[in-house]
Length: 136
Image (cartoon, rainbow, N blue to C red; front, top):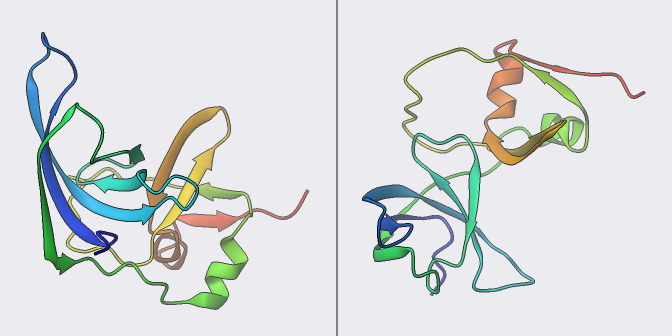
């Protein structure tokens, strides 16, 4: 049974000397070229993590809520097509970082930053917080 879209929580223990922390998030994708690798969006964290959650020994006490499927489907396909592969300017507003659900999310990278982030670009665009840059 697929866990894509399911809510998860687990303990994280980096090494023997490090403290244990709790992580809660949503499984976004099972990577096709490595079926044990999943992309996970953790609550309160803007980037996406790639983990072999069933193999990684740092992941402990994994709990999967199979009945809690998050919705992250596209709501505006024309605007989505305009955003894909295009450079954008993203304006950020500081808040507490909490989100009630997971609507249309995009994976995004920034120049000179190796992290893969995940944002609701469609809503940011509609709110005026994102501009699509012209092709160069």
